[in-house]
Length: 316
Image 1 (cartoon, rainbow, N blue to C red):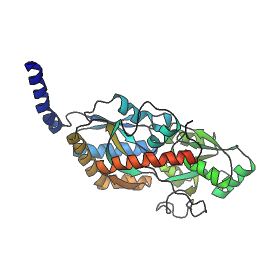
Image 2: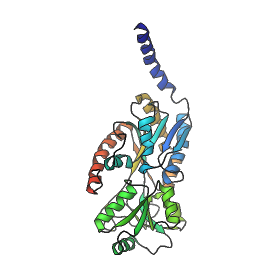
Image 3: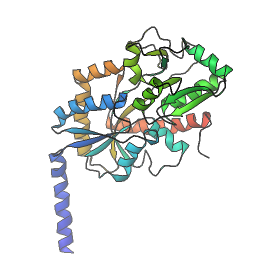
Image 4: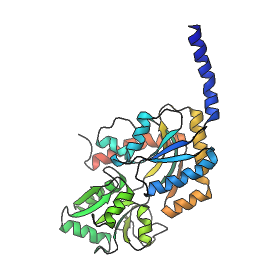
């Protein structure tokens, strides 16, 4: 018994030292989307900048699939709470659990570290498409039910759900073609496998290069980068979609380690080089402290259930 007690005492004394020495080796940040997409582009640059302030390399590991839930799910189920394996967390992580049964819980099984940014959403078509406006696309879908195909980053993601809402508001039926992420769905549109793409601003460089035509965006106001493109509200659809995201770790992390990660990532957020990346992707800063991000997660999980139910996608 005395040996056990001494061992436990030594472990308790070692915990602050472990936190104080953190990080002593590279940190892995999972991007739950394919390489080359908008999220991957942002996180890779963010990781490079963060390394300056954390004193260790931050490695990006891609784990795409299941509407972006493989990454946070892997961390929730497999990561040790030592701060060395983290994941991007996005809106799909709060929605998909209401649409299908998952082996992990976004509130119970994760530690929320910091909120960092969010996407600009829009619908694009190829430059040679006959659709010159978003109304042209809707009119075609109305005349050809189920034939107007569009790509998204997966079932239950914001690009999918915003088109579901457009469908309800306009009374038209679209053909949804889910992909693993932005890079894949972009190739789908470039190759002519789909007629449109609903996605975040990973399509931006193709719009600027004249390969894609941007028909509509879904923010509360027009973008700085494409100010002539109407919002959904401009078109009378009365809908705004934003999709903030941040970084999470597994449940049970030492608060001292969470603070070290938060503070390092916060310095990276405020770094001028990071702001340049956000401008290139037409993304806005979305800083949330660990406490505020956890509160946001609880509130959003509840609200997203209401959205999924309204769209008729709630799991039976």
